[in-house]
Image (cartoon, rainbow, N blue to C red; front, side, top):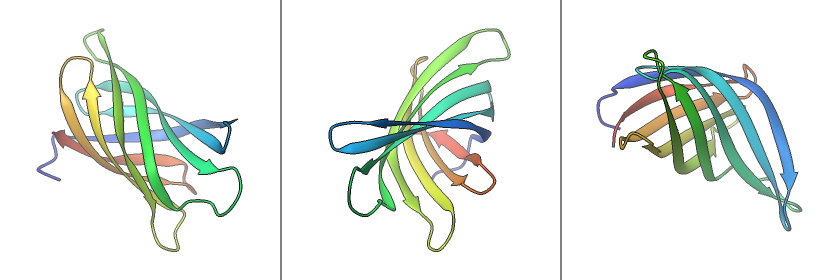
Length: 125
C-alpha cells in the first residue's frame, strides 16, 4: 500500500446471517470514525458454503455511509478479499473502495474477532 492518507477504527455492532441457495452470507455491521470522513457506518459481507469446510479466505465487500463534519454525507462500496491470519481469530481485509464523491481508495485493515473491532489505514487508489 502507498503512503497512508487516513486511518479508521470501527466497533462491531452485530451480525446478520442469511441463507442463499448454496451458502450462508454473513453481514458484519460496524460503526466508528475515519480520517476526513467523520462517523462511518458500514457492513462487511462474506459468504461460506452451506456444507463442507468453512473458508479461511475469499472475496468480501464493504458498503458504508459516512457523515462528514461539515454536515454532508457520502456513500461507498468496496470489493476485495479477506484472509484469516494463521492460528489467530483475526482477518486481514484488503479493499478497493469507490466513494460517491468520485474518490477511489485502497484500504488495508484487520478485523479482530475477539475484540470485535475493524481498524486499519487507507490511501488514494
